[in-house]
Length: 211
Image 1 (cartoon, rainbow, N blue to C red):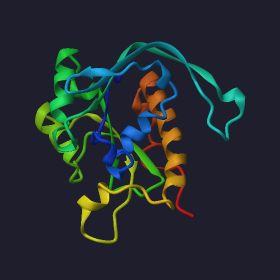
Image 2: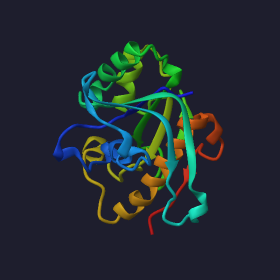
Image 3: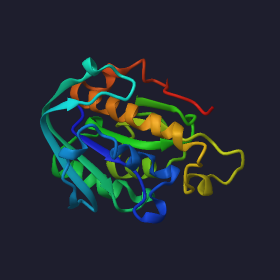
Image 4: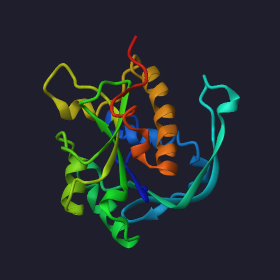
């Protein structure tokens, strides 16, 4: 089961709505976000959660879809404040302090290889040129951790850095606003039952797409 969730992003108002901050935007949609008390720790923002909460319905769901989610163990959450390319320097000390092995860590991050409107759970694998994942692999000594990938798509130009560090366009925002709550609800399910239980449906899930 997952014991530590890391949301990768860049600190600062100028980065808040960037594509590279998709994971931090997702953290704001967590169904249990009101139960998270964030504080400065491990070179980031840290919070934890334990117990039972209600998995809130999504806008298109029938009210009967609401259900209790029980977390058997305490789950730790961290948003590194080190900037993306040093994310591992925040996540690794947290994992070491709580004695959490890499395979019980879930990293939420933006992903160029998935189209906007898609999301995916996967375990281990390549880094896809993602500087945050590269830092995690370096600091943890392995890439064998879970990921929740939020698709941002590739640009039609070679300047990847300017793409990931730019805001979602007005045309993209409505798509993102559908992806984030659905993905956040899936993350809650993964914490309760294990991310492997969401496969293969979430191997590369199309939630919505650009009109």
